[in-house]
Image (cartoon, rainbow, N blue to C red):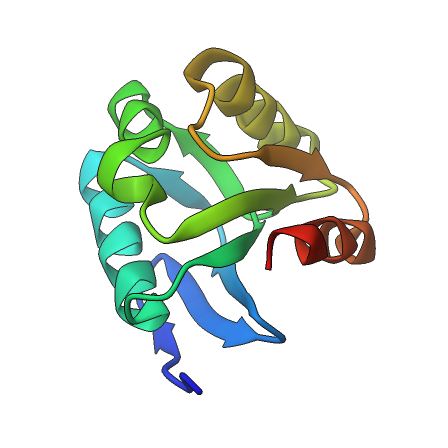
Length: 126
């Protein structure tokens, strides 16, 4: 079992109950460099195993175009079977919806305002 937890200036990442969790740090603004750091650290935690991904984006302020394009495919979607984005904040919900509608990630993804509903939805992708 993988017990690696990583916390950096942007996100805290760990695996719990077969789901990889990403919790964004307060007032997060994601540019391409930040996105690459977050993906690098998630891949380290994944340790070569594919997991569904739960992301609490409540603290998200913005994601620039380059970061959105990077996060929607390629390296950024490696080892992810599906993604559930959780937030109750209007700004983060708008950013998440923009990402899903415009960038259309290569893996199944949805936005949720109920954490348990998001985690339950991810169960089918374990």
